[in-house]
Amino acid sequence: MLPVICQKWEESERGWGQRPDGYSLHLTEEDRVAYIKAYWEVMPSDVPDEYSRPCGDPFVCEVDKDTAEQLVFMNGIRYAETPPNDPKISGWCTI
Image 1 (cartoon, rainbow, N blue to C red):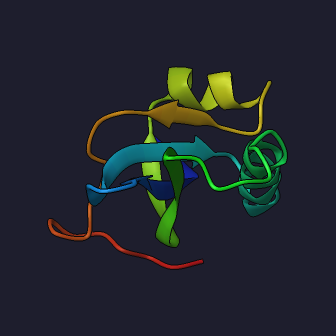
Image 2: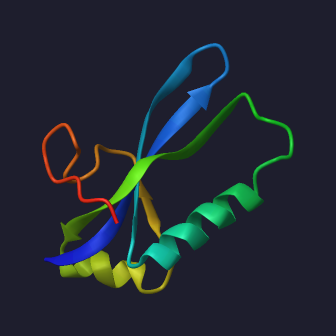
């Protein structure tokens, strides 16, 4: 298992509020920052009716070698499920 950075995301939808929207994984803090910056750069200038945004502090989690190798070629990967080491379970480790 290899350590990576995990960033939780939440979705905001006009008239409905916020809800969890998965997480992204990143090899480094610099990758996490670049991933989020690239995400916001393609968003419209007006607030859309529905969008996602980073939520909470990033934390360190461990992933298998195959997942970590996928991250070598990009700044991050988004997943739609509950993040590993969700703070409701255990494992928050701010960076």
